[in-house]
Length: 347
Figure (spheres, rainbow, N blue to C red):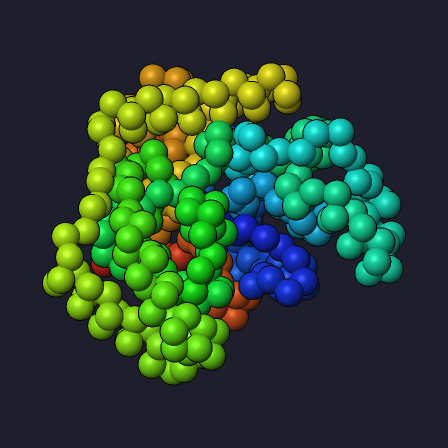
């Protein structure tokens, strides 16, 4: 017994999950005998020491993109599935109300939808109010700013021009070849400040070898890693970690202020929190408890049942309709799901 909580981000054409894929996923869930359940209802069982009914499912969306309103919301309403949208408080738009549910269902011109999305890539307070009034959606916090920072000096990859949004936001540096270190949500780690001298060296190394033409070589990342190690052997890099007090101050602000802003704008109690990138630590969990959040959502796999710790609730991030159909063989059986979740943190 237990509830399967699914995680999505963008629902849009050209993204991993298109609106057509999303509709197929809901159809698959119905075919496999999964019944929609509200998150507060499922969590209510947990508070009473009980497991929710077997083969129940809840949909969650991280970040609060506008396409959750434009595309996912009408589909959810069509099939009467329940969802929770975890929004980044400082990124929610204001003064935007793109269309009513009936108007959205009636649109069949691509340019119309594109013009609606162009107003803001994030959902607005007005749209969130429409979604919650429909009884389809609940709202939770996904932090105040959802920022990442470097968590160690271990290099994940070297910038090849297809970098990550979080990386450019953090460094404001788009030079080819510069190291992209391992990252975490900036509330779940002591942030590391990288060495600018290493950035300069690696960027110059790529520039001297043809820039983007060098980066397009199949072995570019391997050559850059070799040069990076060579540089480290000859120099003493300056990797500086912040003081714990700085981190704790940021954690308190991100968790408390996000709750206050969302509650003020929606006139509703917010007590659910979703960890950015699934990152958390004891400081984050303590702050959630201090600010009267009832639950924290991870990307650890498994089912929500009576034994689940409320601040480490599991979710399954969906990759495709075909992929989910196979995984439902696991998550449709609570015993199998329990064993699987102990072996795999993420799928």
